[in-house]
Image: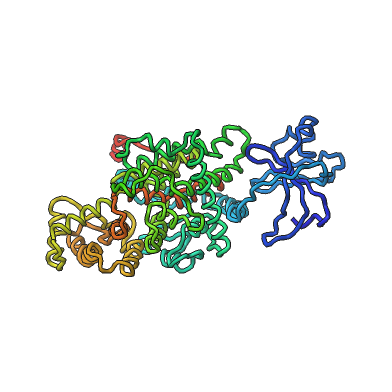
Length: 549
């Protein structure tokens, strides 16, 4: 950006999604060292004459180098994933035309892509034939447990340390992420970290927050003001009120798919593979911004029972808030404590590496180049399953059963007997154990700290605390449980109940809204880094029998 003198007339041709632009401007150096330009439409006369972008030959691939302006000294500059040609020319006939500039986050992701691709290529070239593990029949027949077969960059689950987001534990996120409006991180800061591996600055978080809240406000306003155009809320109003909230959320994702920039560009046939990620990025951020608005609508229309709280109106977005706080407020819970809870909920449910059902389903469907709306709808359908996202409802049901049976007697012997009776009846103790973890889930621990601060006298919390003291030893005594410690679901429902969010069938919707941060971050990176379509090999049981005879 520094090789043009300040007085140079400048024309920049940018090949975007739906149209081509020509830009001019005076070079100046701002804090990001970018050029600032006013943009102008390319005139049709130039295209007809074959002077496409003043020397960029339309018969070449889009963005290929060309010096066909007659002098041979102009150069079309081709950056990673960009299609830009720069030429000096007379620009006095141009009309001013404004456009939205790209965010700092998107620019940073773009700058990181070449190094990441080089690193991945080196990894494959140097170690492509190295073995990372072995596969047993037990693994194949046990839901592929323990099989290493998936690249997933945004988080990693360790059996002893728990989940780490780009290397940071949950306590480290709470300490290091900027942009806080209380003590809990805001979703925007975590999204920035997952996409870049970088702890953002206060300015970077605020820039992303403004971007996302602007997208949310635009979406809500367009849907509420244009009565003649059908939108996602009309689709939801057409569903029976008793339709499960997760069915509604997944349906909403599909109903909004018509807004996908990636799908439109792919259908146009003009998008290069190196540009896929840019449109996936726009779709993903749009969807992350839209989901809380849609979820709040589902909550107030279908979940709440009190007439005074029910509503079929499009929620109003408060752009002064962060994603989590605005979600809480749109649902009808404007207290600072509940906003803090929603920020915590977003953080601990955002991502849990790539092998769980919702993350893997999103990743798998996205690998077929399905857009974020289609891909995340698939993830939500997996999350709706009782063995995945509905687990916290099962925990709450069991806790209320215990509360009723114990009648306030939470002594060690009484609670222990209740737990033992649960096991003797052939049931499991919900909220305890994990497929990977071999310690108390850090997500449980941070929820416990939150409860001790805001609701230490809550009766259900006192029961949860007593169970934490008793259940692990009971499970250990059976000799059948590898991990007797509580997981995230053992606590989350109790927090929501305390703050008035008592509609249990909505809890998985909140989980899904939070999980969009992780799943869609990885979807962007998968396309940016050129991940292939996922296609593992399957075998029949007869094939295995024959192999080992």
